[in-house]
Length: 230
Ligand SMILES: C[S@@+](CC[C@H](N)C(=O)[O-])C[C@H]1O[C@@H](n2cnc3c(N)ncnc32)[C@H](O)[C@@H]1O
Image 1: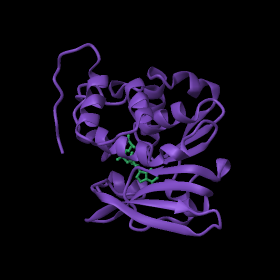
Image 2: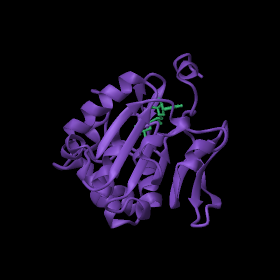
Image 3: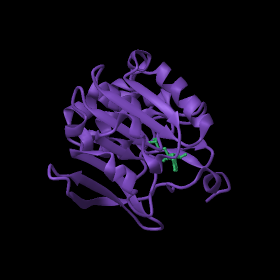
Image 4: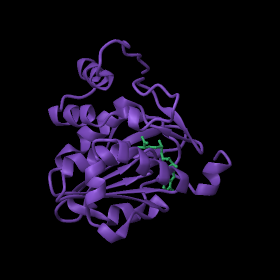
């Protein structure tokens, strides 16, 4: 799906979100509010059109996901991003979703981004500083770290919500272990053919997995494999 929004109007980010809603991509008012508050223009590299519904290159063989995928993941995780909750964003890339997450969980919550390209961690922090999530970053409700996201980030576990922004051949066990009972993880799984999986940890600790939709993400892999082009 690739659509271009009209260039007129003062708030193109708002128009982009309204278009996604009108096409039925998502229904949640909360998600619309958050995506309207976090301007995508703060997160794309200079010269990249921010409001096109398509993934865009951000360097290092990585992309910022398309707005409709961000909306889909936010809606799937909405119940697990309530004020005060904890969220982990694996492969946080530009920092866009981590910024949305922290606006949802608020100052009493905690959001952690893990990204294995140090330059992307640095630029994502700069992006967040330009965005509506800046004050929550300063207050310490959000942090972004260099690390291998396949290992999660045990320091702040267990998490109510885990989002994985790159496709894993299978669901990494450390991420299942770091999910709170009652928590939800959204993760693309597969190689050539991928499904967006919704992983719910039940209160008894058992795990339920379902497929939401077919997707195409860059791989969740080692830094070396990514930098040489997988
Ligand atoms: C689709 S991109 C970015 C997604 C992010 N949600 C966004 O829209 O900006 C996926 C990211 O996962 C990162 N990545 C891939 N494998 C990783 C790993 N093992 N640990 C941490 N980050 C990883 C890539 O560097 C890339 O930035």
